[in-house]
Length: 117
Image (cartoon, rainbow, N blue to C red; front, side, top):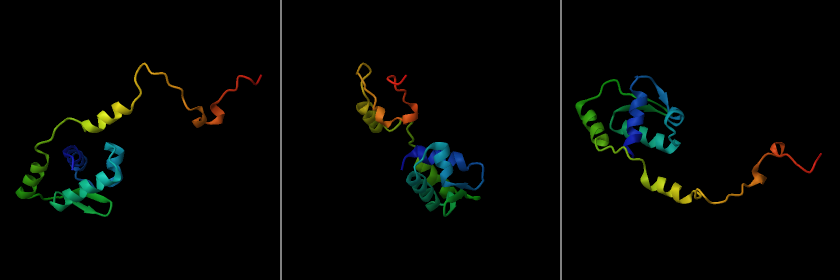
């Protein structure tokens, strides 16, 4: 699990309120599986209380739970996932390449036929 995912969940629940998994998608663009896995792993060590799609920060954390949380996030790197960024860069067209858009994907209401007058 990515340390930044854990950090984002902790940032969301630090207000002590009950939250839902979709909030992680709205706020941090988590996928459903990322949100569910992160909440599940934090619930397993007792940092979060979770029930179905809802979760909140546990009201009383022990020193052991805090140390386990710290162990998960202490080596957080601020670099993004470099392999995914490199893949996007490789798949992108070059700056000076010619590009012909696929007009068939446009809605017909947006097309202007210059032959009709």
